[in-house]
Image (cartoon, rainbow, N blue to C red; front, side, top):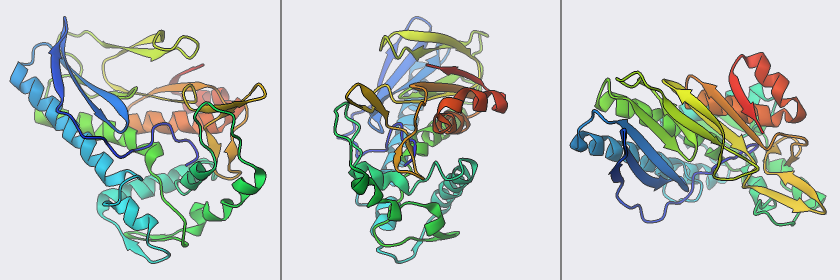
Length: 309
């Protein structure tokens, strides 16, 4: 995938969500999609209600992870990727995600492409210095390209050995679904959903106070770069602070251009975008990274609030 930030991964044994009390809110925590997840619930909520919200959000995250992880052998992604050229019929939810992925490919002029996940076979962004050869990269390029896919909803057909990877949009989609579920379960109660730094709030807090969200500093990990007051809407961050290669003093970003199979040159290390939904914020942050040195002008043209590092 051209701009994977957090891939949907095969979860370890899922532990039950935990609920603790902070000074002004409840904190629910669990692990999903290879990242820590939090649900912040305003303090006026009773403990049983807060616990019910956290369990519902966790079930939502685990369900989406199970359905769309590329590492599992019991889901729709596995069926698509092992079809060996045969057509695969998908459900409505999966079809909606594929339609959205196709729109992103059009918007990025092919730089973002959910068939480009095969590049992970040669690009391993572990902070080391193993750079794949041109032959290794070019040997995979015939397996990349949405234009090689036959997609007539609800049936998808790909060339043998081609693969689909929805990791680049899965986490933001899960955040939006989770905040919708929380709002439906207890209307009017403000909950902040945070899946590994991708965040959404649907309902303002009853006391009028905003949720304060910290953007992590690239230069000083675990310290805030900026604080953002969020009453409703979403924030998503894309970047290479933890996933990169470094060889002979040159840093190689994990943000890959699907058209070349190579890292986007001169991309920011981190792009954070505030938008109405998490998947919208994630779309703008991903596309900005794919614009490389033109990331800032691109975001200014979109009229969204953003922060670059």
